[in-house]
Each structure stands twice: as structure tokens, then as C-alpha cells.
Image (cartoon, rainbow, N blue to C red; front, side, top):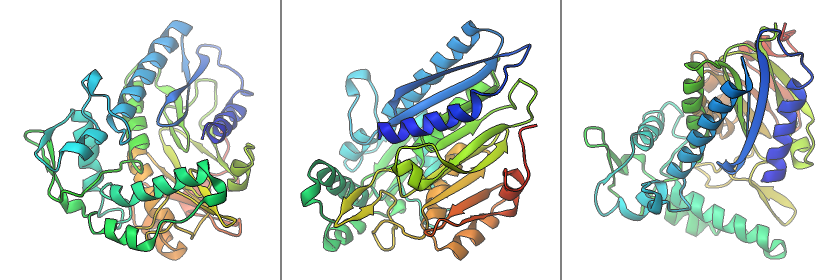
Length: 357
């Protein structure tokens, strides 16, 4: 994971570091590697190093706390944190009070479940845990890597109803009506966290920034060096697998998120074929319609959910889905390497003639 995340970091830096710094504002950058299993990069324009360091530390602290809050694999109860792991252990027995930032994430994901055509389901934790375990075993022992038995996956699928996630907004409690329900917020958590941080930065004295966390990029106001937009590269899936920074397209944007879901993230190999982590809730197998799908829209949490949903639909259905949504654009990389874009994405792309100036 770190190697692929590092490639994404280098991609962003290559696009930005060669650009001139503004006369009035200075450009600063930093990165950290301890949240959401990826490298998070922050680049911002502000008056001085002290201002940047203050907001960089605040962003780091927020991302680290949200990582712990949304973590399903580890407990942080010694830090007083009730998280996804806690809920998966306790919420079937009784309603569990949670932090506002956890409750809001769960409410957001549940309320947008129908919007995502039932494709992005945080209640699929039991199925995703099986795939996670088989992937981990396959990575640690490649010679004996295997696929989960379909019977096991189908048994887990019986306990994935989003309706069994009971949220009490008045008391901020979470309860599982199905004792075997398990949550996995991996399809929304990173983007949702990035949006929380972005909102804080937009209201700060450093509103011109780019926050990149793996395949999730959120940009603020335009860069303060004379350009009208940030340049965000979309990585070639084959380049990602080879740990290079080749890009297939560049979008020029401000106050927009670009979130990519692809088959080159979190995968393992069985009999010469790669199996990634984006699991179709209908087939219970990794989606195979695309190499990658990138969503462009303002809210990074919504972009995260939509990128998963769009990735798991056949192309015509996926395109119709995206085009039915206001303020949402997309780029698709098909299995043969060809690229399709919505008209709105094309206008923002280098191919469509867009530039940063």
C-alpha cells in the first residue's frame, strides 16, 4: 500500500512543484502516513510558514482522529474512542452512544445508499471481511492464494441490510437490528474525512489548498500564484501497478473533489488473475467493468460513495447514473484502456482544452 500511495504522492508533487510561487502568498507542503492506510499530502498557499504549520498540524490531527473513529480493525478505547470496531462488537446487544462525527458519517452513508443505487453499502461488512481475510492470506502466502467460497459469501450476504442499521438522531446512538450485521465504511470514510478537513481549511486563513489522500483529492480555492485552477492528474492503472506516475488525463479545478476507485488498489492474485477490493453487492465478486472510475463533485464524501457505485455498474448504466446527478462529472477507464468522460468532465480536462491559466 505505501508504495502505491507514494506513487500518488509523487504524481501530485510532479504536477505542482514545478509551478512558480506567488509574490504575495507562499506555497508550502507536507505529508503524513499514519491515517487511512495511505500517504496524505497537504499543499497550501498562505503568508508564512507558521500559518501553514498551524493548519497542517490541525489537518493531521483531524485526519488521525477520524481514521481512528472510522477504523473497523482496531480498538482505541484506551483513548476514549468509540469507533466502528466498537460498534461491530457491541451494537447488536444495545444502542451505543457515539461521537457526532461518527454518527454523521453513518447517517450520511445510509441516507445516500438509495442515491448510489444500492451499490455502496456500509452494512456489507460481513462480506467484505471475508474478502479481506482471503486477501491477507493470499498476500502472505501467494502460492496458496484462493478465492472465498461462494457459499460463505452468500451466507454473509444475508446479514447486509442497511435497514438493520438503526440510528437514533436524538440520542446519537447506533443499534444493529440484525445480530450478525457488521459495518465497513471504507467506501466513504476517507472522502468524508477529507471533506471535514477541507471545510475547516476553507474557513481558515489558508483556503487555497490541495488535500490528497490516496485516490481522494479535495482542492480549495484557486492557487495563489496567478493560476485559475489546480491541475489534478488521473493515474494510469497500469502505471499504478508498476509504481510509476504515468497519467492519462489532467483536470483543472478549484473547490472540487476528484475521487478515483480502481482495480489497482488493495488486490491480490489467484491463478494469475488480480482480485481487488471493490465488491459487487449482487455478484459478491470484484467488479470488472472498468480499470478505474473518477468522480468530480464538490463534496469529497459523496464523491467517494459515487465512485464506488459508478465503478460497479456496466458502462451505459454507470454513465446514465452519473448524468442523472446534478453537479457530478466522471471519467471512466475501460478494460481496454480507452477513456470516456461526461461532457462536463471533458470541459475541465486537458484533452478538452482546459488549462490552469
